[in-house]
Image (spheres, rainbow, N blue to C red):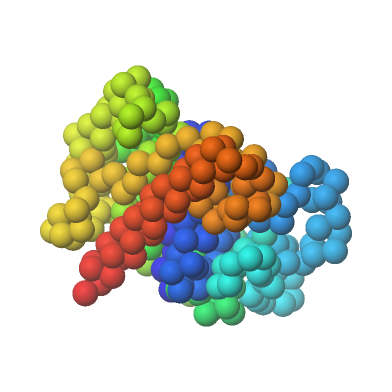
Length: 349
């Protein structure tokens, strides 16, 4: 069971879309997958369940409120006289083997408490169970469905919850979009991720956290690479304005992020990337903008590459174009899933 965080503290880079599409593709390839919605905005939960507004989300929480990421953590955060247990997952309609650990709009309420615990748990005994509680809950829920992969959808930001989730993950994928802000985010992550690794190393060695009811695990994070999405294609490749930023992202990873990650052993062995055709920029996939297919994907709670001709709701040349785009996206996400599984398997061989 491998935990994979999809993280970038820049918003609007299709983290949720990548989690949903990658999770579906991994399940399509025969793996059991748990998607974890850790973003208080709950976009992944809404996407999976087809919710169109806050009222529908409220109805879900009224009926399923004990089966969310936040509710599963409450025994630790409220010092309840019961242990954390696996949360009942949502089986994703239309894709066997794919499950959701639902998000919660109120998860953000736990951010401050977790931040205090991660700084002061050695001094305040009552806080010792909090840093390891997320890992315990996610692992227990993953085991309850016999998951092969756990994909964690994260909010943009550098708060305690994201620091914790990145630190307890086995692998990380960095979603980006072709613009200057993604380049800036890569430079920022070159400073942040090594600091988080140092913190996690120290936390895992603290006796008070090692002996907690929910022990903080020894960190084992490795960054698999980037996914660059939302570019406009022209004649089979990215239009020149987008290619410029794609090149800059790859360069920023190669010259600034990669050396910083290597310094803290946050990458796989170089030969693993080489054997699997991953270049120095660590790009796992280039995925163009979904354009008009995104509305049909959202309407049917189905990835663009899995839409049926009936769901495409078109005819003639328009249907042919939609179907060609759908099949191209299927190839893109199949390639991404293959890269992810091959890198992980190769690194453990």
